[in-house]
Length: 256
Ligand SMILES: [Zn+2]
Image (cartoon, rainbow, N blue to C red; front, side, top):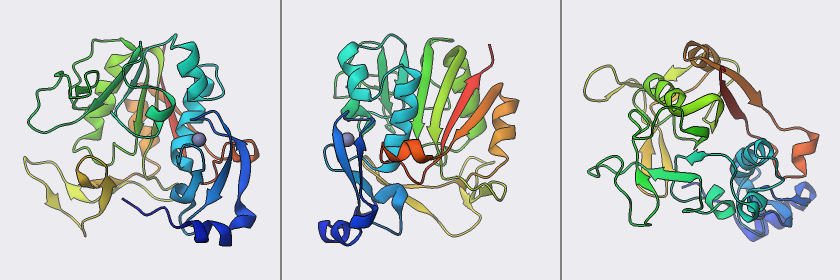
């Protein structure tokens, strides 16, 4: 897990501190830059501790649900079916595991997909082969997951299957505008074959997970081939009030 930096670092970077409403916890909060080399990770909400990437995803999801924050969605209750491919994390400090019409999951090797996990609500799910019914979800949310799956094309097809027409896959992945996808591992056979130096990302469940690829601009073509129209949400002056500065959120809409 990348370090968030220290309080003293935040004080040194105080000129880049901002105040606004957090789209996760819903509080009027201060967003402190605790790691200026990595603002995607370094801007912490002092109330819920979320970072900018979490808040950007939350902002897009909350707006799609007609609310200013996930905490507001939680108070009102969900009117749409939302599947978040995680069983913990900052989005679930705004929403709540177990709330009606919210599905949450974690991939657990050795656990049968569909089986309920120890939290009593989430299930084991493999994005290559979800146990959910066709057209059962209005939103699917994945936050930095698809760089770690062996076959993203299979996952996009599976996410499309479970979305209703007009439904949206809201997601983040490490992404560069200026080059095509870099495949780091050959996954065409039954076992992984490294094509370049291993890149590991921190993970709260497994400690670290291998990055199979760094996505590039061809991701839009991949999504189009799977029947999605995709918009990339970038930070703007207005997202600064939500403590969002340096992230990109994909919104892939399943054609009606
Ligand atoms: Zn917050």
